[in-house]
Image 1 (cartoon, rainbow, N blue to C red):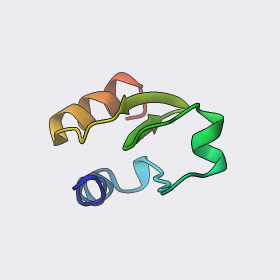
Image 2 (image 1 turned 90 degrees about the vertical axis):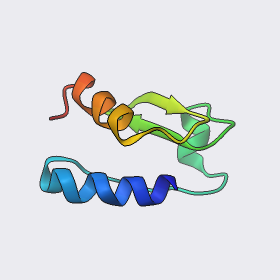
Image 3 (image 1 turned 180 degrees about the vertical axis):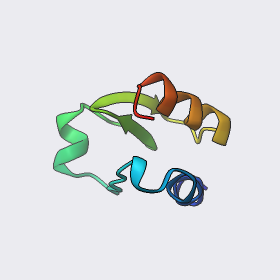
Image 4 (image 1 turned 30 degrees about the vertical axis):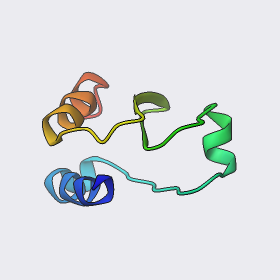
Length: 68
């Protein structure tokens, strides 16, 4: 579900955003202190954690971070 949403957001925003997907335990998750998933990090800030956001919530998080 989250990956599908990310694909939609990538298509919507195009080159305005950069998306990096990590799965499973990894160093990047450890560096943010993440112990649950999914987690969405925007501009080096953990914005959404432990839930699959709605498209509106994700758009709002991107906007609030000042990314677009």
